[in-house]
Image (cartoon, rainbow, N blue to C red):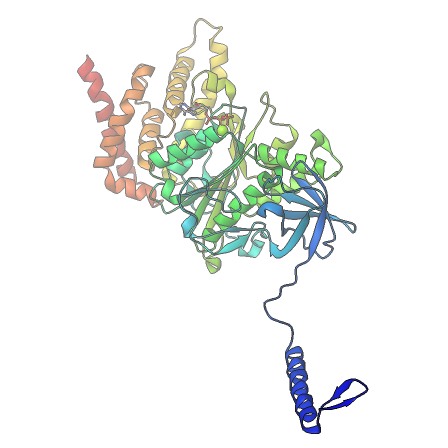
Length: 523
Ligand code: ATP
Ligand code: MG
């Protein structure tokens, strides 16, 4: 090797070889660079938590976030972007974790808040995000649907045509509900609101109706009791229980009824009939009020934010019956509202009364008197369900309502008068028996023919000669006999056929025989 000024000099051939090698290396580096960036790299937008309080986080640096987009917080907690401002965003957290602190990082997911849907949900108890709460296996569904969806368009809706039987005599006869209707259940605390809704679910056993019980802000024990009742009654397999408790972050409580409605809509859009119970929307309104105050939105009447009407109407507008072209399914809603001191004209109850198609009012006075279910017929109404009522009910409902209202007027007066004329006496006798027949134990819904049998007996005056306390014991034999012997009439009633004069005569004759048999034996 030649040496010049202390440096080694390569011979020409070796230099050539080294240059060629380097050129190859450079070429392959270029080729790699030109083939694009490595595909396993992901770009995520991240922001920083600037403030956290009461289940609300304010986040900076996520300026392109979509409204209601899911964001990922430390500890794998998700949040929903609700309040988008030019400077930062307000996020409602769907969970809690000690790692969520100011200065921590938040990631965008690009997904709008959604909830699992599908057949796998039936028989399960879950929260709005699909977390299983019944201790069973995780959900086997990968189908998800946005929690908030638009209500069906007017042209896609069909009029309410098919009755939704609750199995409760007082309601099916006097405040009939149709499939696709929204009927409010309203009353003070402990007046039997949940029982009416749960009994309606129980009455759907074997009808193919899918039921959703959505509990918002209730005690865990109360929800567990409802789940047990549904399981014992054999309807849990066709029911989904969606729960958020009072201890959950207000954001989760707020989103739960929307998520439950999306679960219901999945079935409705497949042509099924679905019933959803929201127990109760006062809890929902309170959670939203808390959120809004934390988001520093201006409070209005009773400190509720101005859009409280809109959040409830947006929810309940999603219940509807659809036309045949859209599968012919229906979603009926039974929202529950608790009143205080019978004040039905408070802010949220009046809102809900005007959003829904009628209300079932449960009176604490009737409840205390033991007249259960404590339905106050005078203050209850159903605006669209009457058209769907089966013809057999119409035959008895008019007489029933008349007898009862005449009796109520006279009853107060009769307390003071010692002697009454014969006509008034007869009205009181009939009215007392009507009231007795309208009583019904919880979780014992009656079929249509059973209800008609009891109601026809009282309107025909077949109970008039009996003592009031003898009537209850007659319900069971009457129901059994009509079920066994009047199968063809029962079918006609259920298929909404009008009964002929002879049918009614045969019906009443049979009722007379049953009612009079045990009394003859006791004489
Ligand atoms: P809350 O305000 O606590 O939610 P609620 O209005 O939902 O109460 P329920 O829990 O349904 O009322 O009923 C209150 C109590 O009345 C329960 O103990 C229930 O068992 C009883 N009850 C309700 N309806 C009837 C009925 N028809 N017959 C007998 N008991 C009933
Ligand atoms: Mg209740």
